[in-house]
Amino acid sequence: MAILITGGAGYIGTHAMVEFLNAGREVICVDNFSNSKPCALERVKQITGKDFKSYEVDLLDYDALEKVFVENKIESCIHFAGLKAVGESCEKPLLYYHNNLTGTFNLCALLQKYGAKKIVFSSSATVYGKPASVPITEDFPLSTTNPYGETKLMIERILKDLHAADNEWSVSILRYFNPIGAHKSGLIGEDPKGIPNNLLPYVAQVATGKRPYLSIFGDDYNTHDGTGVRDYIHVVDLAKAHLKAIERAEKVSGVEYFNVGTGVGYSVLDIVKAYEAATGAKVPYKIVARRPGDIDECYANPDKAYRVLGWRAENNIEDMCRDSYRWQSNNPDGYGE
Image (tube, rainbow, N blue to C red):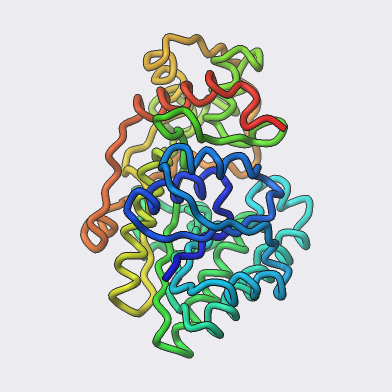
């Protein structure tokens, strides 16, 4: 019996595939490669020494997705697939709602049809909107500030309603904070298209000379050094949380929500200093105007994940920076063409 991993060729997906394969689990990857490359899956095989099935399938194509279920005995699902750029979601809201929601409708319909009613969903701390305080616990009020975050929150509600209608469903919702870093092998990591949207890939490209400097958006926030504070988590720790979550989903039914972060907030300047200290590389930067919508600080209280799942982040900020630098240095152009 296999675990279906949607978006398994992506940044988080590949790291999860490694952890699942190393744990002796059978996995099947589906990915449309719109924001990933097939060679990333070959790197997963290289790291683990294990083979697995993969399909080039778009979740919007119900018939193609059903073929995966017909050809395999699938018992559960890790659902990563979806469009994820906040800025783009504001420019193209219909694209994001159609892709992320319709793809999930098709997936859930097939999980239900084939009796694989166990799912771990890749949600986001964006569902907390602008929290009134920190650290954030799972019972905080939910709201969103962009269409990307809204799709995450809507899917959370859809999965909750699925269980309310059929209590055989087991749903684990992981609300990520800010995944960074890369596998210690240096073979897989984050490979953004074009200009990176996220801090660490941009820092890595500056540190390796691919870009001249980092733009820091604002230094007048109500934080210890004036730059925005966020909770950064090593992508391998995040991947391991999915393994813990599916193990629990296989034993209990219901809907559970977990923050997946370290519980420690680091400012942008903290990250720059940690990166320089961990790698010996210089990260020149310039302070520029704030971006609209950015908040002072956002970090998790991850105690529930430890209490219920037995999961806790193990890597520190130096590990995250060092592994990010190794990946970028070994792969200056990501996975290439």
